[in-house]
Image (cartoon, rainbow, N blue to C red; front, side):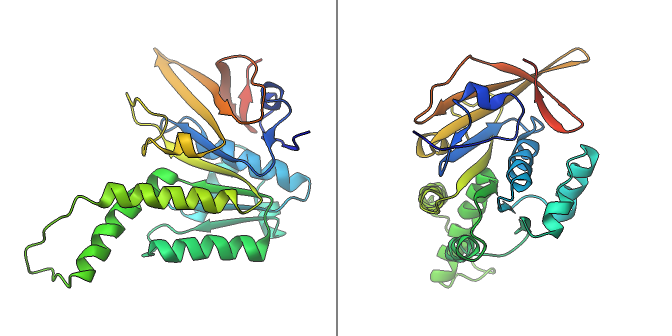
Length: 247
């Protein structure tokens, strides 16, 4: 029997045999504004209600912006953060090398022992690694800013390698993790890097379409290992309390 972890989104667990397999790494992907961060915060808050520690590690937003977003949706994350059950950590604008990020994540897990973990986002992390790899390569060659710089097309290769390593780290943490990815308009893949969907144990896709003054939002479970998936696209809305399925 596979042990399950609730998603925190009311009604969604019924479509995936009762929840996410414990210890799985799930890719949560979608267009900007589709509710990915909200979904992830609901996931952490749901665990906090049962005393499960959670970490929200972001490369994109200041902690204050996340708290504000929760307040607007009546998601009471502050009480759990104040009690130490949930920890929000922002690495936005931090000048970190990949080795430092890996060490930081591993240290967090060893010290805090979270049962739930969110990485926001693998897309920003990928961009960060592309830039960082070029900077490190330049430093290695002792290239000065006043000299011509020859760019070696290795950024994408390095970022993919880093994503593979980060995914492996998350899988070995014995915590249930959600990694968020931006889904570019017209993309043929399910993530910006086009490999996260193959590395992770499950993929949840959030989509929306604006028709006139109406917004049609749908959620799809693209894959979930060791899980019987029911149904196809499910409509949802974002309101007070977060994401709500229309079932």
